[in-house]
Length: 152
View 1 (tube, one colour):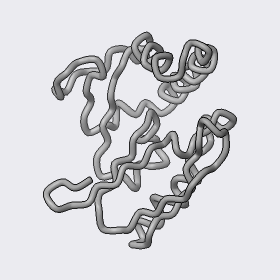
View 2: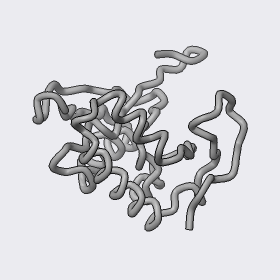
View 3: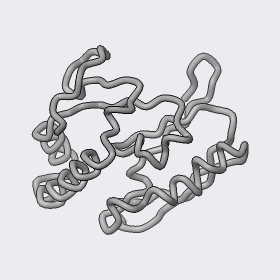
View 4: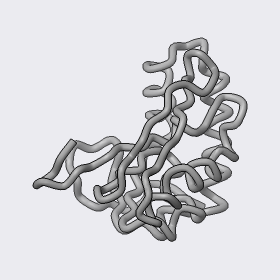
């Protein structure tokens, strides 16, 4: 993908998390992607395949482009030294659950409830929306900055 002659590589946090390690996967993303690219070296990481339940093919990202790091915890505190811009997308829990079940099926409801509880706990601990450069609604069709819907 290119934007005005600049290469943009998309990295999904779901390529690092797994069903049996949904919370503490992030050191591998730092060591395999963020640190090498910051040092001007190629990043090389193995994608987690959710369908097979194991690590799959290797991916290489050459330095010199932009990296779009996508996922619920893409702006976690541990990543902040590597981020140039953080966007928080505020989406109500019922909508997140609806989308998750649409993608993964009703049989995944219990797993989604656990993930959402874990995400809520992580969010309350790290409060990433307070450090985001941009906060947008995940249910509206425009890119206008909006205040977070709910956070204690």
